[in-house]
Image (cartoon, rainbow, N blue to C red; front, side):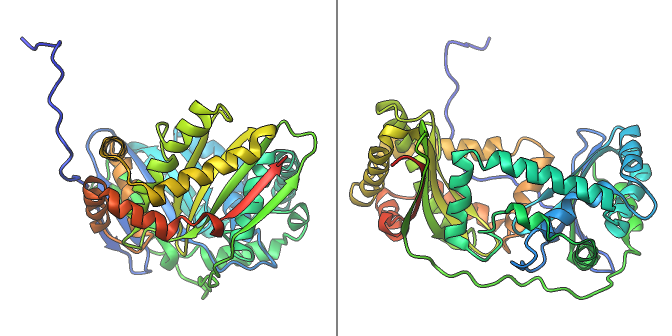
Length: 423
């Protein structure tokens, strides 16, 4: 009999067992990566496109085109698209980020043959009907007006703009920008960006030979029609500054501070992730213990390291009581300086290691998770060797090395600091 009063032995994670994708390339240049599992008769198919070069004069093209893809084609209205997808119990969504745009389909295998023509119609024949475009513009302007009343939104927008002004990473939509959207620009943008040579299809689920063959047969006659510019402008390092936006009636002040930094391509990135976790990357972090648990200045505070195609961002974000805003910033600076001057204790480092490895293993719960891990490295120009580096770094990095990283990447004087409310 199993003695349930005795805890099971603890075993450290030695290595990750990541599923490698199968790859094929169609004659038109479209790449298909597939992750197969027999667990369910379900597939998730993602059509992922690199965004065109960002033009400040027409800043909303990428997001508008991607959002309106499902709003009508040459042969289907938005209502017909929804009806066909819903009839087969499928689910369709569009997503947009600074670097990529994508269309995602979830469907049962037995209905894939019926719904794939709808997706092909969307990706080759979207027309952006004027009625849907005007509805989109009105809705987005209304949402923006509401969001601009929130201190945390104002804080985030100004932080990004201060770091990356004039680029896609720093762009923040303004009400007047929506009035500059032109139908002819949307259609040209669509024609340039949504081409097979710029498309990566990632299939996860019961992705057997029949499913991959069906996808290949459906999209192998998709043609490249026009050349396009995908280069993004160089990013300049900005000096640290304090940007204070006063809100005299504010009960809370929003704080966001940080800097442009390395991304996943840099060998120091996994170590910086460990350092970030110690500082503010989980509920037991130093910032949470100090600013929330000890001082009671906030309900929550955290830090993060975000990796993008052409840059990385380190930031700390919180909202605190307006009357304690200045002292909260001082406490944040104190915690950063401690990382630079005092070695992290082994008990704390062991706790962070276990948390990070547990989070990594927990993120690999199904075949979709393995596909997501692949996308993280593939679109960063890396391979699975990154995860070997990550696990070795998390398991073996020393307090001394973390102190070196803190001094190299966490210069409080060099941070952009944005405060909205009272200070």
